[in-house]
Length: 255
Image 1 (cartoon, one colour):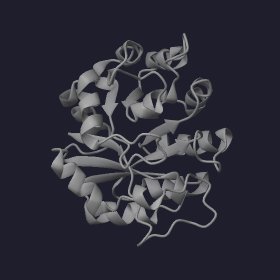
Image 2: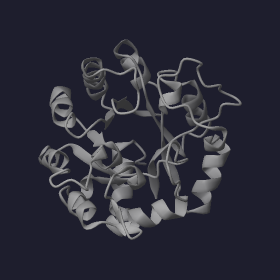
Image 3: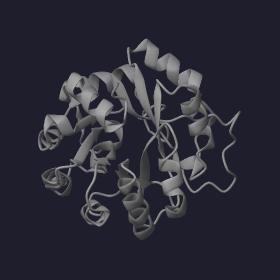
Image 4: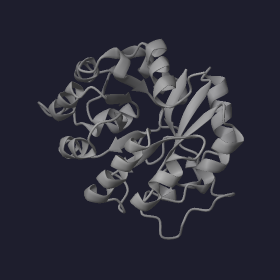
């Protein structure tokens, strides 16, 4: 299995910036590389995509230090200003660029799209998190290339038609849906299981364009799930073997 979305948060070795433009995790929300590896081993997850957390902004030092140490276990998805994207994308271990217009106060749509186009030209993946109503224009501005919609497109499944804009993006051949952080998506869980609206959203995307991620260590969440719970949720809506093959190809884990 490959977890396509987790974070390394190690304020003891890599202090959080004093002027962070993202959510600053509480002490109990940290996750060192050792913590991450222990959790992965306990659940039979062999490899992972470490995604730059917003608290560190565009300083990818903590992320890249751990990816460098464990190149067979991790790939990195970085955050960067447009002028630094090409350099980072050419760095070993970097598989993609994160554009977070939902939780990072420092990223505007125009500069995000410019950065994303550079990453795509470098042959990398763009990981996109934004409000559902903003996604179509952003994806269109990126042009051709692989784009992953984080956290189920951050849809609101309690609203009729709340997933329509994300479903429509399935028509774009290189758009992938990441089944991650269902606890952040209104209406995704019903009675502890995937809701019918959630399974309908996932079904809009072909099986080979569905990914699974945990969002460990589950920061800024009202009720934090266990890792086992998010694995079980993924298994309930995905063919994990197919999702793993997709992740291996997309993020450069193919042997």
